[in-house]
Amino acid sequence: MRKAAVAAALALAGCAVRGTGEAPSPAEPPLPAASSRPLPEEPAALRSLFGPEYDEALAAIGLTRETARITASDFSLVAQGRFPTALFAGLVEDPTLADRWSRTLRDVAFAAAGTTETASLYAAARLGVSVRPGLLGDPLAEEVKTAALPGALEEALAPLMPLGVPPTEQVPPAVQAAAALVLRAARLRAIPWLGRALPEAPRPGDGSRAITAAESLGPLMEEDSADPLGSARHRFERTAAATDQGYLARAAAEVLLAADRAAGMLREAAGAPPFEFRAATTLGTVLLRGGGDDADGEGDRGPFLLRIDTGGDDRYGGGAAASPEFPVSVLLDVSGKDAYAAPPDAAAFGAGHFGVGVLLDLAGDDRYALAGDRSLGLGAGVFGVGALLDAAGDDAYSGVGFCPGGNDSRSRNSCPRNSPRPVACSPPAPSP
Image 1 (cartoon, rainbow, N blue to C red):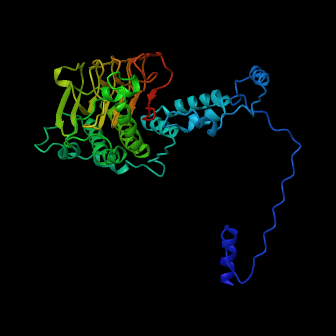
Image 2 (image 1 turned 90 degrees about the vertical axis):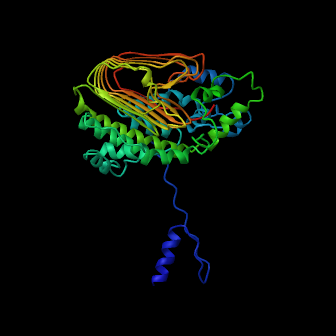
Image 3 (image 1 turned 60 degrees about the horizontal axis):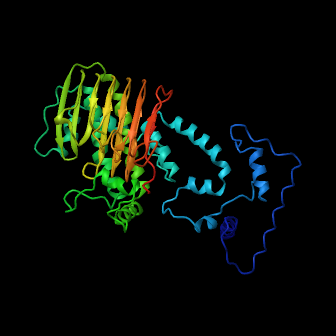
C-alpha cells in the first residue's frame, strides 16, 4: 500500500515510474470554455502612448503591432554589444512598450530613492541581479549593538593600523558608533565579496600598476588614435566579462546598508562641538570632524576610507571614491550648505572604480560639481558601484565626463534644482 502511494505521488509529480505493466495514459484535461466577455480595457497608467498614428504608419508598410517585431534571431545578425541587458532585449522585441516601461521604472526608482541600499537594489535588478540581504531579517542587528559598545571604534580600526590607533576620546559617541559600523561592514563584509566579484582587478603588491579611473574611462569615451588595434578596449571587455555582477551587487548592498544605518545614528550628533579625528589606515584615511565650517586643504587629498562631518558649511575636494587599492570609500555629511568640487578628471562623490563609493548628505542646500572629460562620480561606476543620495535641501548638480546623464566627453550635465524627492544614482552595467 505504501509503495503504491509513493508511486502515485511520483506520477503526480511528473516522474516516470516503472511497474509491472504499462500505466494508462492520463486523460487530457478539458479545455476551458472560451469566454464571451470582452477583455477589460487597459488601465490608463499602463496604456501605450503609441496612438492611432502609429497603427496607420505600420499599415502603410503592411505591418501591425503584432507583426512589427524584431526577434532575437533578427537582431543577432547586426548585434555588436557583448553585454546586453534584459531591458534592452525587451525593448528590441516590442518597442511600443518603451513608454510604459519608462514610466513604471521611473516611479519605482523614485520609490527606491529613500535610501542608498534600496536604490542600489533597484539598479541591480535592472541588470538581472537580485540581492536582498535584509529579506529575512535585519542583517546588521548584532553589528549595530557591537558598534555601540565602548571601544568599538578602536577595535574596528586596530586591524587596519598595525602601528596603533590615535586617541578617540574627542569623537562624539554617536560618531564613534557610526564609524565603527561602516568600518566593520567594509572590512568584514564588503571587501571579501569584491574579491570574488572583480578577479581581474589590479591589486596592491602584485607587481602591476593599478589603472586609474580616467584610464578605465578611455575605452568608454572615445577611440584612441594611438591604439588603432583597440588593445585598451580589449582589456576593458575582458575585465567586464570576468566581473560577477551578483557578487558586486552584494558587496555594494553591505556598504550601503551600513551607510544608511550609520546616517541614522549621526542625526544624534548634529550640533556637536568642534572636533577632528584623523587616522591613516591600510584601506585609506578615516577623517571624522564637525562643529564648524571645514574646508579641504593639502592634507585632505585622500584617498579616503571614511569621512564623517556632523555640521557646518563645508567645502569638499574629494571623498566617496573607490579605487583598486582602496575599494571602499564612504562620505557622510549630516547638515550644512556644502560644496562638493573635485579637481579635473578626478573620481569623487559617489564614484565606484573597482569598488564601492557612496556619499550621503542628510540636509542643507548643497552644490555638486565634477570637471574634466574623464571625471567619474556623482553616483556612477566603472567595474564598481557609485551612489549619491542627498536627502533634503535646494541642491544643484553639474558634471562633465562619466556621471548620471551622460557617459562621454561631449556630455555636459546639469541636474534640476528643487527636486521634490531625494536624488539617488547607481551605475550602469560595466559595458562599453
